[in-house]
Amino acid sequence: MEITRFVFSLFFLVMMAVGSSGSPTHWRRKRVREPCKKLVFYFHDIIYNGHNSKNATSAIVGSPAWGNRTILAGQNHFGDLVVFDDPITLDNNLHSAAVGRAQGFYIYDKKEIFTAWLGFSFVFNSTEHKGSINFAGADPLMNKTRDISVIGGTGDFFMTRGVATLSTDAFEGEVYFRLRADINLFECW
Amino acid sequence: MEITRFVFSLFFLVMMAVGSSGSPTHWRRKRVREPCKKLVFYFHDIIYNGHNSKNATSAIVGSPAWGNRTILAGQNHFGDLVVFDDPITLDNNLHSAAVGRAQGFYIYDKKEIFTAWLGFSFVFNSTEHKGSINFAGADPLMNKTRDISVIGGTGDFFMTRGVATLSTDAFEGEVYFRLRADINLFECW
Amino acid sequence: MEITRFVFSLFFLVMMAVGSSGSPTHWRRKRVREPCKKLVFYFHDIIYNGHNSKNATSAIVGSPAWGNRTILAGQNHFGDLVVFDDPITLDNNLHSAAVGRAQGFYIYDKKEIFTAWLGFSFVFNSTEHKGSINFAGADPLMNKTRDISVIGGTGDFFMTRGVATLSTDAFEGEVYFRLRADINLFECW
Image (tube, rainbow over all chains, first blue to last red; front, top):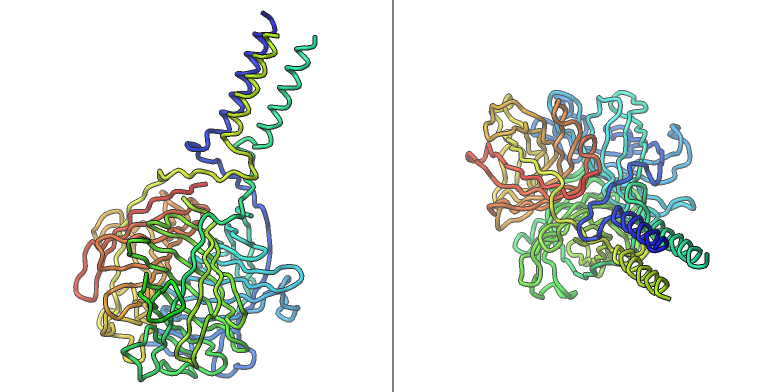
């Protein structure tokens, strides 16, 4: 019968559609590589050098046997552990209003070139953003850009994950540097 | 024909149902904000102060140039790095049987107020729980509650993610404090 | 009518199929515990001891009040913070060509036994692998195997998560140790 054939083909079409979305127990989801949120911030690090305690936003708190905690060590600062509480701004001006704080540490981990390992958070408490974004990863800071992981978040950034691309926007000797963070979030809740 | 119209409307209804669950390649999953697991623990930190090596569960291992490793530094302990191995209990009694150990570090990262950055694990090896939960995030410890990220887990907590809400349940001077951790896991495997 | 009954039963069959894959707002995905990628690497740590600065790949940069930064402290090195930049090899030979670098830190966190907390990255820049894998977790290093979390990745390992099983493949006194890392990734993008 005509209509029965039609209904059957309909049935198979629909089952194929359902099938292509997979059965829930066996299906490995194909991920979407488009960010669900994009953010750009700058943060500003002024390292304590014995003379700038009023302005400094970071300090050396660990150093190798051959170093000290006032001057960054030789051999590309290998072994220096720095803790920071840096202002976050929307543009590249240190004197712009801070929209949050970048808090955590970095640790220079290679003798031959400048490279560091970072663990830190962006902490927001403004009308625009409340909550935190947590980061971890290697920062080979002589590269123009380098990617670290967004490992979690809270508040407005609840459970988020993603990748942050860091670039050194400016530096002045061994006292000041400014990083640009292009944050691309791929898991938003 | 009556039946054909009926079948067609059926078809569209079904396709809409399928469509709303999305095609696997383009679909961004709507997340469930209900925890898949809830846990509450307390952990107890006794900082080494030069006189309590028998009871101490943590010690200062990094400090700024103006500090030392026996007494927490001025300026809200900015720059002090503390490593800990703290007992975890089910209630708020330091002398209750430990069900695991909280192991890792915190680092005071701000001069103006008390705030720290945490990286640590809850390590369990009991009949009730085996495995570990890993945490990272900012802890603005003057706030009544503060959220950090659960960034992963192993064993019973394989691949888990979530948010832990910390609150200071008690503190005695600069030697003892007790944190309550309300752990809400949103990804369970 | 016959055909109407048939169409109705079809309708319910299809709705059940759709229903079993869940509605997108209420459905909690059942996870696949099969790794989407498996990797095995070795990495080699040579700790600076005052005499081996040419070969050393790691150094003590924080220590408790009773320790120093040239010799690992007593009480199972409790409180020693070590930063490292270790070669990664495909086999267990220190002299094999390095395929990447393991960069980060470990911190001994218990007085009674050897155990440490790790935060580090595998950094690759070869024809085979480009990008990084980020790790965090507790390492009770007297256990034959111990699991830590893969908390994120970049490049070839974009957004990955998983579990790495570490085992001590060799050690020579307090200067050299070699870890085997069996990496099982359960989220691949």
